Image 1 (cartoon, rainbow, N blue to C red):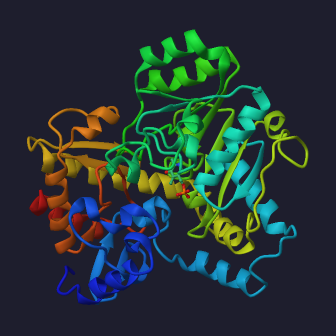
Image 2: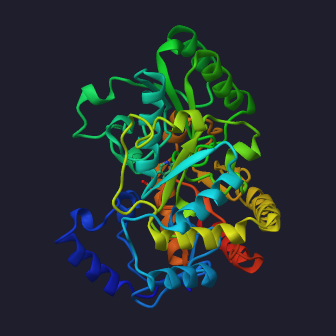
Length: 425
Ligand SMILES: *Cc1c(COP(=O)(O)O)cnc(C)c1O
């Protein structure tokens, strides 16, 4: 393990740059903020991937949290292959859609009705449209550093890839499109109370990452998360938990199970498609009734409920619905985090963690919101990332992202990672 040669990846990147802007189909993949260029993947299995130069890496990014079962799980891959052989899209309903919807609802009882889409971006965008249609109100409240995909009205103080762009928002978004989006600081109960006291009756929806993961992992205080439920209930606003990353990760039933809070609507993505493009939004039946063809809120998709993605999602959830999976993951993560805490102690590094997700911040002070995150040292992180890479470990390439432990990150894999971290920091 470790890098010997990157010539083929470098050539592949140069070629890609001539046809794809920045050479990538999603900005963080370019590795610009950590001062290097991307590896091109040949194949992946379990906790590992190989690049086209023949280097092998332990993956801690796991397609941004998609692969809780590890890359290329054979049950999931076989289910997808079997589905492909029956045709890969119909534009006509198939039973796999209902089967996966039932399975999702089993995990998330608050999603009494749900609909599949192709990406987390579509899921949050559609959920917000439904919430606005249901309440007849316009204002959307979001939190600083929470990322909900790249729909226009959500690109306000978002984290993740957008956080590395100097203007936290994006060019190309007219100010008129974001004038109904209010942004509040994460983990700030006073600001939340005050905003709802003054404007609560005009708010259509409050959307939140119940555990923030797109400004690095930033867990909520229990009081803060509870308050999101209280103020929305009091003012008739819809509470949307964006569980695109936390769903099926922090527990089978996501953050809402872990923290025992019932939102009105939920979005899931990433894990739910088993590595294929699928996501879902859903919630209370009376709210979801607003959606066409039952109600006046329009939403549609040529490839929505794609049978290959449904089959892969179903195979994934079939494995995850065994409680033992999460118990074991949690235990192994506890051990890993305990040892990691000792390694970084006294080195000016913050370790934030929830379940199987964690981030190391090169920061002297605790990180509880986006402003804290942004004060982390970028150069030190970039160096740490490159040090890890040279030791054959691919950590998520930004302090605005999480790292993900999968069932394939066994104790001996984690042992190698700990050793590499100790050397790299
Ligand atoms: C990844 C993510 C999204 C966007 O999902 P895409 O499939 O990339 O469009 C939305 N919300 C959260 C919390 C996410 O982590």
